[in-house]
Length: 432
Ligand code: S3P
Image 1 (cartoon, rainbow, N blue to C red):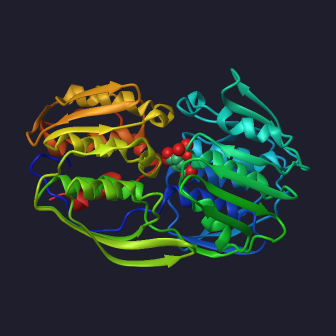
Image 2 (cartoon, rainbow, N blue to C red):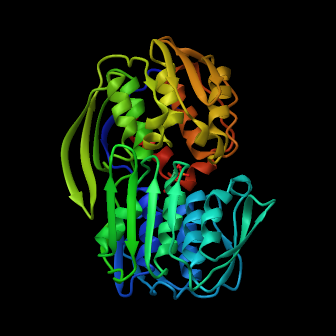
Image 3 (cartoon, rainbow, N blue to C red):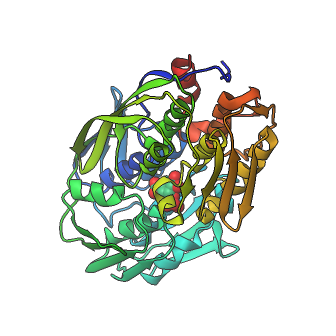
């Protein structure tokens, strides 16, 4: 099946389980004594690597009738691994579990694939070293991470300057086995699933926000309660089909059971500002997370948009697909402050720019801002897409065929398995 420029997106769509929540529920239920049951876990490679890691570290995890059953071990009780732990492509997996290990008296070597081995880890380890963990990185920056955790970790105050939920969550996980008060100050709001899940598990955590900062306080004086958790649909995966539906007038899509956390739905606000017709049909709160059903009925072309740097953390993973939307909107769009995109699974800022150019869209990088000169005309396409095995680049430029005369060529699309194994099956199902 190839998508063409006369394809429309239609149907009732259930996005796969949320990746960020899937990692976290595996890690946190593994630290809760008793039985937890997880349904709709994302079975992407990234999450399955986290599952294997938690088994190596002592959790008992099995699958029964589509549900995962977890029997955890208490904080501080992680097992000594007898081999390196492989996180594959997953920055979330390696960074979060590095945080967890940092306050356990065990020694571990954390490794990853070629892409992960080039991603910066110091942003996390700089904090974890301060609590007492001994950590060694390749070239003082990259995986493998060799870590000796400290079972008597120091409770500290942290300022998180880089907008990253992975840094914040690594620190929060280290706090699970740290005595005393841990205080975290975030300079920009990032996804807050670790906070919400800890609340759902009865942990002693307080979160406050003013117009400048977010503050988190944690004390480990209460056990984590085991729980049953149904993972809501992933907005970052749904974003591909939602954006595709919005940029092709005539499309009509109902989206069911999608995570509707405001730290994740920045792209919905962006698309609405661009003229997308997206309606919320139903909203509910489960386990401290909002979940919603949506409806898209698009009649007109999208308009260009200017995105400010402060809004990027709330849609950091959706910039590649939004760049396709901007390409098909008449006029200039600017996405400001994309520095964090340069250290994702690939340098996404550069790859977006290069691939847009190859398929016939003018764009410029100015500092860390991306300027896209869009129009409602079809692009020439036929480009050899360079993706460096980055799943979101592959999926975005596959959908770019919706706005191209000639289909683009993408060699080896297997990396979509890291976050969205059913992507091509869903393409078959929802393109008409
Ligand atoms: C994630 C946080 C984000 C995001 C990634 C998942 C998480 O990374 O890009 O896909 O689950 O915490 P950063 O925290 O590094 O921005």
